[in-house]
Amino acid sequence: VQLVESGGGLVQPGGSLRLSCAASGFTFRNYGMNWYHQAPGKERELVAGVSSGGGVTNYADSVKGRFTISRDNAKNTVYLQMNSLKPEDTAVYYCNARLLGSSYWGQGTQVTVSS
Image 1 (cartoon, rainbow, N blue to C red):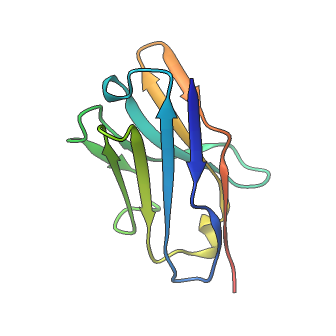
Image 2 (image 1 turned 45 degrees about the vertical axis):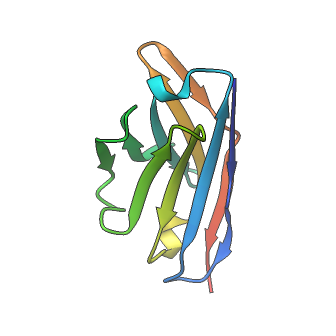
């Protein structure tokens, strides 16, 4: 099983980034997919989730209206479009796949929002 995140980096406040997570080694279309983030000294928090078919999404209150999660089951990839980024969005962003008792994690990608 592999989840490989990409797309992180340094961006100015108000800017945008698009994270991608490429999945392999499991039946991607059966799994709910999530993005979490973890800032230094803080616990890992759920940012956004999408159902296996892509029809249901949920977001943390702090990112509603700014972030959009989507998935392409043909490409085994989940995305997180992040707009209007704020310094408080700075964190390592992790991709997570979940189905009943199974949960897989990527290695994370750093997002830094700073002028």
